[in-house]
Image 1 (tube, rainbow, N blue to C red):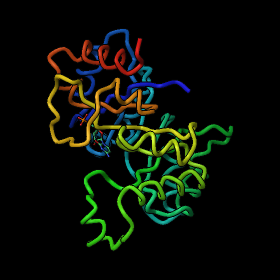
Image 2: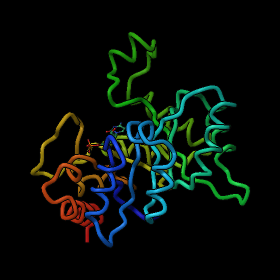
Image 3: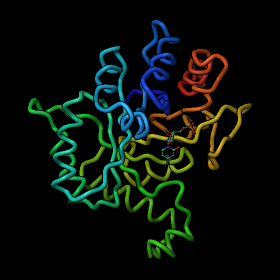
Image 4: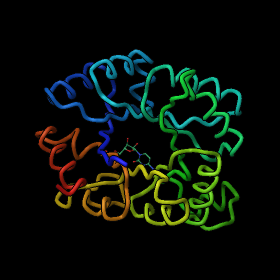
Length: 233
Ligand code: C5P
């Protein structure tokens, strides 16, 4: 399976994202569009970036009743995206409905990835507010297995969890991992971080990298360096 680097395009409007993508001239990186940009600019931003030749991970983390998610996924699939996601907490019924909605009339569909527990949710909050008494790591692995049983393609997780996810769910189950930093760059608000080389060694299939590229003085060389370190060539 092809490993790749996905740039988290966390910009607030289309002018900013196009200014950024224009600097790549011939290159067409895989990009992640999140809630901020999507809610600000609507589906048109997805069509425009796709028309420029980029693969798109649409990071909207759906979580609703199965029928609603199925219909929403049908709409997203028609945008010709390459990857999207949902919360595994929506249950297997919701995940199965999402897959149905995503599948296009010709049988193709974007990759569907599950969020297990948000990395902003610590074990204490999970126990005290969500009343989930199992440990955090066990909960993450259990949700990953639910996603796998429902037919999803993989999970979003830390590179530090990628090996355990592969061990439990199989080597073909994708790990999409944010929390990646160069060894000489700022951690920002990320806590459990690895370098691109470590992410590869730990079994990440896709690394999702934002600020080390988007906020770099030279984003194109930061992208090239990150991709090279991740692919190991
Ligand atoms: O700028 P940075 O490299 O930290 O960006 C990481 C991206 O991955 C952001 O878009 C962030 O929202 C997303 N993400 C994350 N941790 C998760 C899920 C998504 O950092 N668990």
